[in-house]
Length: 209
Image 1 (cartoon, rainbow, N blue to C red):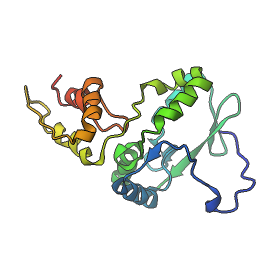
Image 2: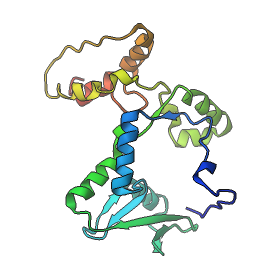
Image 3: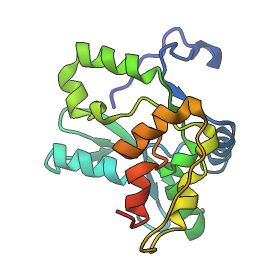
Image 4: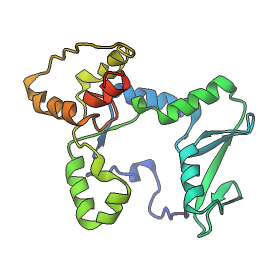
């Protein structure tokens, strides 16, 4: 990516959160994310193991770059460089060992240590759709569900996975009246915005649909 100026940023306190940010994170996810940062550092980009000779993170990013630029990519000064000059840094690690490398790969893609969308996503999407409709389509933003999964249902997906392989099952969910409409929508339309399955999404993974 092109180098950005940091004029005016003199401390971490200058990096203020956007007031419209439609994301939140649970205490459990935040704690796990903090541990991941301490253990692996930033693994959100393209990470390569000098020991194994394989990518640890960034497989899909690299694939997307190759397809977009027909494979016409170069590596210069520790970064992938596109024909139009955009740079994507490559982080190279070593000395982690096989198990830790695999743990980093899983952690980098784990929904359980990530944030989740809040109801404010709806107004953010409306603004994007109105101002940049083509971008919204290309990024598939219209498929996002702005309703987050309530905290009390966070373990439902794992419980339903235990049903995998069963020919039939009866799932009973006790739903507070304040969540009735939300849960009915999940059951009708599939998975929730934060990726924790309910409804059709869970049942498909359990082999029930």
